[in-house]
Length: 254
Ligand code: ADP
Image (tube, rainbow, N blue to C red; front, side, top):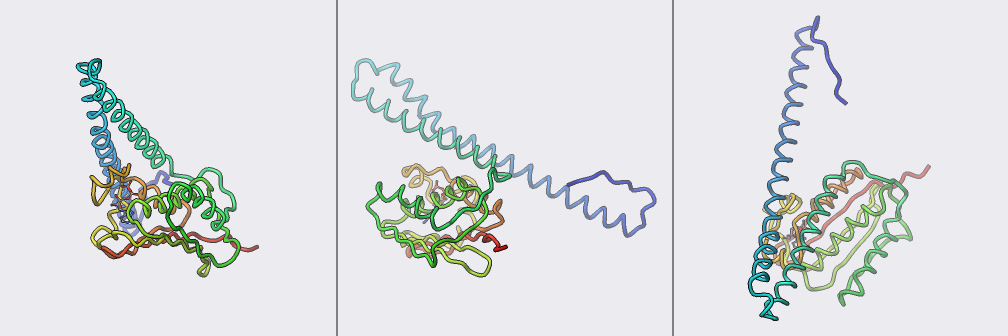
């Protein structure tokens, strides 16, 4: 909370402290403005590609679509894919913009939520996803949909960027719930460990695009973790696989 201040009759030390606070506030605002600016320009850039693809296929359809059945089918298919991509991008951007305060807060069992989320994948992918949990339940405070979104993003990425089994472990460490999602896929080089949580950052843009990636998944997951007073980080070795670790404060027993 910021409040108005009066500088009259202040001692030298007090004025010095105020100057420090004031400069910190300016830096904070500058950083935020710069982040917003980057976000808007990155978002426009990301939307530009699908828009121009839709536009050129539309023009092609107008010119030759009536006579060329194959071209007609190809164009409709491409337009459909790109519109879906734009839809996903816009939805994800809204999620990022909205995720300032968590909506409905309730007691959530992380083990049950993970098991439920995994079932949404098991049917679609004949891939082994194993869950190792110690205990029947592990309770955290939070918004169920948002927490599920983190789990979904981590499993979805593990599926996209690896081809072997995926291991999930959930355990309590002191007053924290720790969830690890491990894959044995392509891994991430050290230089990219921090960057992959940046908005729109993708190590391999073309591959990510092919798998429907937007580069926003991990930014969303990290932002949700932080609004829940938790954290999301990665350990990984190129060519060996990655482990994403989500930590959240557990519900304190009263
Ligand atoms: P995307 O939609 O591209 O998957 P994310 O924000 O979820 O975006 O991830 C950012 C980038 O981090 C991905 O494009 C990919 O390069 C890398 N990445 C994410 N998860 C993994 C993983 N499990 N293994 C290897 N690379 C990953």
